[in-house]
Amino acid sequence: MDVSVTFTLNGKQVTVKAPAAKSLLRALREDLNITSVKPGCEAGECGACTVLMDGKAVTSCLIMISQVEGHQIVTAEGLIKDGQMDPLQQAFIEEGASQCGYCTPGFIMSAKGLLIEKPNPNENEILDAISGNICRCGAYPRIVNAIKKVGGEQE
Amino acid sequence: MNYSQYNVHSPQTLNEALGILKEKSSEVRLIAGGTDVMVQIKDGLVKERELLNLSYLNDLKYIKEDGNEIRIGALTTYKELEDSTLINQYAPIISDASKTIGAIQIQNLGTIAGNLGNASPAGDSIPPLYVLNARVKLQNMESERVIPVNEFFLGPRKTKRLPDELITEITIEKVKAGSNYFFKKLGLREANAISIVNVACIAELDQEKNVNSIKLALGAVAPTVIRAVKAETLVTGKQLDLKVIDEVARTVSEEISPISDIRGSAEYRRRAAYGLVYEGLYELLVGTAKKVGGKLSGEY
Image 1 (cartoon, rainbow over the protein chains, first blue to last red):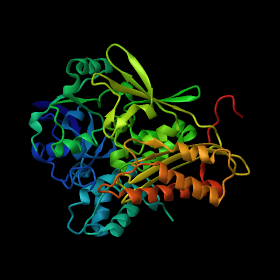
Image 2 (image 1 turned 90 degrees about the horizontal axis):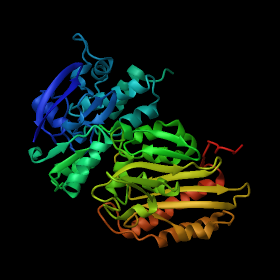
Image 3 (image 1 turned 180 degrees about the horizontal axis):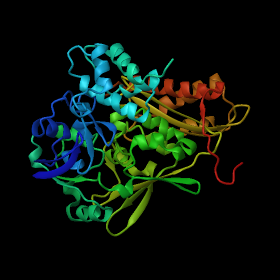
C-alpha cells in the first residue's frame, strides 16, 4: 500500500508517494532523485547510505519512508550552499580521500553528524564516528585526515 | 524486494497503538527503530503483512529518576542512553554496552524495547539489564503487568509479550556508588558486530578485595541471556586472587550452554566466556575496573 509522506529534504519541504514499507534509501534514490545515498549492504553494516535525520547520522536503509513524516533529512546534496561545497566536501577533495568514491557521501554524512555534536573531535572520536562506514579501497587514513582538517582538535 | 505487500500503521499515541494491536494482534509486526525489522523485510523474512510503526510515540521516549530506580521509556535510543547523565551516574554499564551496539548510525535508531522485543540471545543491552534487576512493563488496552527481565525471555526470538501487548517501560535499580562494573563483548569487528559472547558484571568489593556481592550475566551462550549463578555463589564472600578468578571463569564456562553457529563454535564460546570473565575479574583485582559514581539517596 502507498503512503504520502511529507518531510524536509535538504532544507525544502517535499511530499513523496511510495510503498509504506519502502526504505528511505530507496525512496531517496528512486522517487526523489537523490543519488548520493548509495545502496551497499542494505543491512546497516556498510554506512554507504548514511544521511542526517534531525542532525544525527543514520543509515537510510534501516528507516521506512513511513517513519520520516515531519523529520529533517539532509544528504550530501544538501551540504552545498549557494554553489559552495561544505568544508568537509572540500577537504575530502583536497586530501584525495576517495578512490572509487562509492563510500564517500556516507563518510561525509557520518563526519558531518560528528561535527554537529562535537565541532573539535579528537582522533578517537573521529574513528568512532566513522566506524560504521566501510571503504573497500582502504582510503581510511586520508578520510581521517580530511575530517581532521575541518574539525580536528588543534594541536 | 516487494515493499508494496505491506500495510503500515503509524499511530501518534500509545492508546491508538494499543487499539490497533487489540484489533490485529498476531497479524501485526512491530517496528520501532527498525534496525532489525528492516533487514528482515529486505531478506523476505517478515511474514506479517501489517506493520505497526511505533516511531511517532514520543511519550515513550524518556529517562526519569524515581527514588532509587530509573525508568526508561521503551523507545529510548541507545544514543540517548549513552548521553544520559542519570544513566552515566547510576547505571553506566548500560551506557558502556550501548556504545558497543552497531555503530553510531544504529545507536541513533535502535531502541531499548526493540532490543528486548527482538529477543536475540546476543542482544547487547540485555546482560546489563539482568545485572540491574530490570523490570519490563507490558501494556494492552485493558491492563498492564510487570515482569522481571530474567523471566521475560522464553528462548531465541520468544518472549512473554502477548500479541496485544506493547513493552512500554523498563525500570532499573540504581547501582550503589563505588560498585565495580564491566561490560565486555567479543565480536568480529569493533563496530557493527553481533556478539559471539558478551558479559555484564556488577560487583561490590571491600579494600581487601573480598567480594561482598556480585552479579554476572552472559549473552549468546544459551537460548536466552543467563545469570552465571554457580559462579556468583562460588565467588561471593571470597577474596579475589588469580586462583579464585581462574576458578570462577572456569565455572562460568561450564555452566553456560552455547551452540555452534556461523559466528563461533560452542567450544570457542566456552573459551571466550572464560577469557572475558577472567579479564573482567582481573581488572577488579588490580583496581583498573570502572566504578559507579552516583550516590543513592540517603547515602553519603
